[in-house]
Length: 482
Image (cartoon, rainbow, N blue to C red; front, side, top):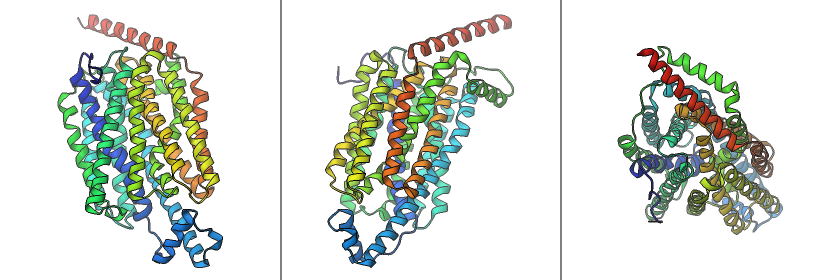
């Protein structure tokens, strides 16, 4: 029974269906954002210089530290400079696509969430954004070399749908668990996501080896596959998850009511002071999390990880992240979400500083074994921080405002991603890789300092007090109607 993560839960079927959405959307998170499409944009969509094979071979020797740049012929040095400039342009284009889409999500998330609470439309919007993202992901298969505008036109709305859908998925967490099991259920969803990611990686590696799809120019089929995976995977939650209860407001102007609620929440009403403190800390360390997700494969390429090796490195990150999610489920409800977040932020800081040290010691790439070692820390931190942060929001959120508050949480997370990704891409282009990695470490260190100010116990009391007041208002309105 211990091997069954659903054992002892009163609603295992519903929890499984909720986790299946995490399982399904990994095709977009992993294959599109983190691994394949990000590299495809930087190496195929953005125009690359044409390099003679002999010169390309010498460039590879320089990147592997087997040949000093100064000892190479001038034409090789010139070609290396052109290749590095093209790579920097590609990173910047990718950061603009990712950052701009997240900025749109920032503006939409809280209003869409509040409207969904008012109208009882969370499930409809969850499934609608999922279907739209899946269809647009399939369409990425039409993007070829030089098609920067088409890539942006398809990717940006796909990412908007994916990110907003994530908010609605998280808002179902309080519905499928109790206060005592919120950490466990959150970790189950996160773990199912990593199971989906590992399954996808196994399929991608097999296809690369069997069908000769190692080169990024041959990756279009993977984008179509990612979209189909997403669409098929969300069938179960669409059928099993319960629909929303009756609308929480009878207002004839839901958009105005949604705007009023968002203004009230953003104004920092005193009853949710601890949630506000947590979201400020989350904003800062979210810069780092979102940046790492968007640039993980590109950073690995800087250490000469390519093709199948790149997929294998991503698989390692995914395995350690999945282990972290499983381990977190065993202790998070006992020690609290804040302590769990603090622990994983420490892991992030140490791992990022190790990356900085490697970039200083081996500025043109070096031995790969240190990257494999540090990758375990990065994956472990990634798997744990996500489920802990989601649990913290769930603990501090009153039950009648879940979509609104998780929409606010999503807004903060996406705003962090927009600024973090744009900042990281700009620093990498104009100040170099080492400076960008230092910036990444600072994001997590700043979040660690700010999270110390959060009082989790007081925040839970604030949420419960709001629930009691809302219940009293509902009873009063019911009595008045009678």
